[in-house]
Image (cartoon, rainbow, N blue to C red):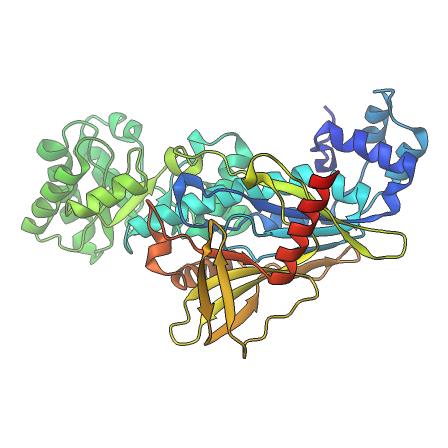
Length: 481
């Protein structure tokens, strides 16, 4: 079996274009590409950037083996000098990106790549794969976590994920988005996302009685016991047998950290009944976990109904972002350097206004209110622009440019940070817990109106006057052709 090299995880047209760039000399030109998206999944107000760490690992290891080159040679369409060039291929450019866990909005660069044309082209597929997948799951997880209103949320979706990487990296992204842990063991081993679990119905069915199954489990795992109570009859046998096992095995040992899990039926009704039965038995400390095809909308409804749930285990609807399963990130050329080193802006136009790109090498600034600390707006600027915090700034709503907002008492933060410079990684990836904490802090800086699940407030992402004028000039030039 051929050894998997992620350099070959690349759309074939990246190689045909790169071969063409090599033959006509374009491969020596520095190019600028932006990674951005156009619409928020589930009609939400923002997305959570994720996947940068895996992209960094990919860039560091980017190379082609003799076996890879032989495979390309077998296609009989590539120039031999181009294949020779690939033997010593390494990334030599610059990459700027927003840190993982940052709330990001449509049409602003999550990542910017400055690199010779072939290098920038070959990494497109993996850049989009890494950012699109994990940003999608982190965004969905964050919605679910916010719906839970401070209750614990665990990721339970490995068996329903789209393949191994979907499960492993999906669990990582879910943790960034705010989940407290995962059922995916390997994600803990690789990325230190806390893993844990309870039991399957099969455990209970293996024993002659439900009580014997519960008692044995309590004896084996006294300090991490969660009993699944719906294998037979939740109210008539499941909860009573769990109460008996807790009282006979755990309470005499002074252990009070235990729980039951509901995985079917009317979760709201059963959780209330379970809470009363547990309290009547004096087990006020016993927690109630709920699973079974949950998402942010079902969890929100359960909370509104007063469901007595302490922990939510969320599977398929989070790990696949079932209600909105595609994150539409794109990778677009925005500038090219000429032979004199001058940056020439490029634009893509379309009859679909939403697909018209924002040209040039850019910076992204986030503006915060001085008093509340809340994020007010983002502004895209040409790379050499600096926003003056001492001067009033008028922001236009990109969806309705007659709507303006003048900002006075604000602070400014540049969102993108250098990740690679001249092919060398200059960014130290934070720990997974640091990324998760950062995400929670940054989401807290958004106004509640932006965080609504339906019809969120339209957050302002504006172009600076210089960039606005440049874009319109390019549009007029294209129109005149």
